[in-house]
Length: 125
Image (tube, rainbow, N blue to C red):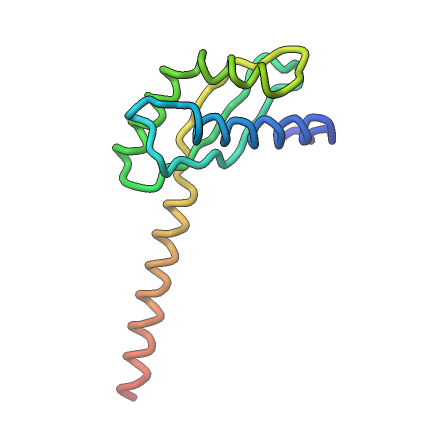
């Protein structure tokens, strides 16, 4: 992974903040879950493209439908982003489902189960 400049990091954070707001307040596509979080934005150094990682609370189907809705609304979202962020170019947006939060929740539950079983086992001793 390439090291990013401070300027690029600042752009990523600003775009993430604005996209979160736009998705929460302005996107009306019924496929987009109300429980959608933008977890990471990677804007290319030339500002032409941006990978937008989104996490959706719910099942895999809710995540897939949300990404479809966001892809369908990408032009609208990009237009809103152009008005709210002062960049030379407004990047083309590519939405990617990020299941790392769901994975973390799943792992946490498994760890809790193992700890409970371990505690029960030690109580018997």
